[in-house]
Image (cartoon, rainbow, N blue to C red; front, side, top):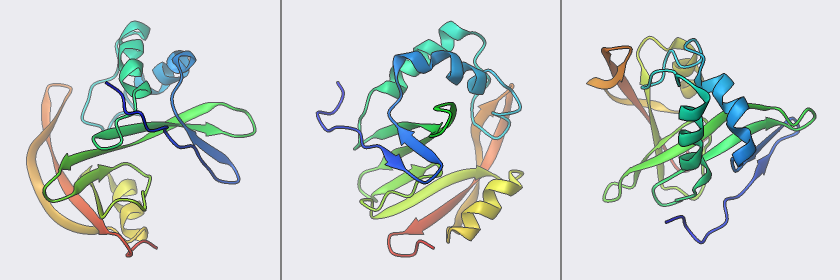
Length: 160
């Protein structure tokens, strides 16, 4: 069951992070169906639009104490260009895995990055994230191969 809390929208001069909508399926499939887009993700590309629609149902639900996903939209064109998410992994440690969004309400933030994903590692370091652990062996199964990841973390107040 989805939370009764309303999912917030965030805006910059150029972008809007908004809740997903049912009519995002086709644009989302362009992102999820592209193997190059997902080369560092822990999942295989979506094989067809119906599979993406199934994933979209999960994207639309809002469970802020477990996970949340936002569509990244160019404000001017209103074109969906990506997504951002966070997943709370361990309530005792208050650990969360965060995509590219830093949520001030969280005590600590962290995310996993494949060791070969140099652009994401560089961005994490520029934002103040520190290498906390890894490799975490065989974390993501992708294209029939297990991939290890590095864990980067950020404590609230250390943001740049």
